[in-house]
Image (cartoon, rainbow, N blue to C red):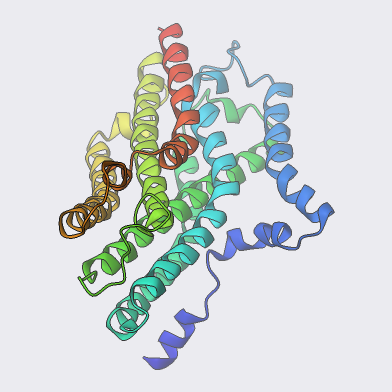
Length: 341
């Protein structure tokens, strides 16, 4: 058992994604340019291949073009770009800020919380290893869809099809990295907040809006924004699936249209994820409310500053940063779908 725990403790974090991120961490200008440009060059190469093989719009032999495929046209490219840049930064940001708040609250009572955090981190690392198998799920999903005749990627070359497989599989992987980080950062924050007591050195007049919880509140708002995004993205994917089924009169048999019970599993996962994310937000709000009641607040301004959590400029900006682009995509997807009716 000790060997197994040692194995888990030594694993790299999100092994696949850590390789390109090392280009950014190298601090060398050329390597940073490579890191920045790679996802865009890859996406351009993929779209160019689709366009040159006349798979972008309808033709006599093409029942379902890329322009009709809302999931692959909109959601997958967005997850690819967003996940590529955001997943490792989000992981490192969450890890650092949670450690800071842990040390801030438990300088003299670290043993009370440290053991629980170690266990959570080990489970987190095991799920990170599991996430490496997510690309296989993406490949199986493509294999299921490829049984449909007249779909756009039957018309592209093997090179383009390989690009597509890589795009989908890695987008699924990035998605899993972000979701797992959001879940386990929320669990760690929840664990830390459970042990906040009157003796904890919380200063109601701390120079940020949330009594020293400002960075951790931004992580929670990130998690909330991501939760909203994935709930909405899930709806678009299900909508796109049924739209493809009915638009082609059942010629394109997709996962949700053929097996509607998958929607229940899909919805259950989104609800569980959203619940895990929301709980620590409610807890932190409650802690700040208790501080207001127990502390002597000198002015209405101070009271408003604390009770504004999580509604302030920084958290609104944080929320928008993960939500505004999907919202624009939603409008585009809806207009595109209606135009195909």
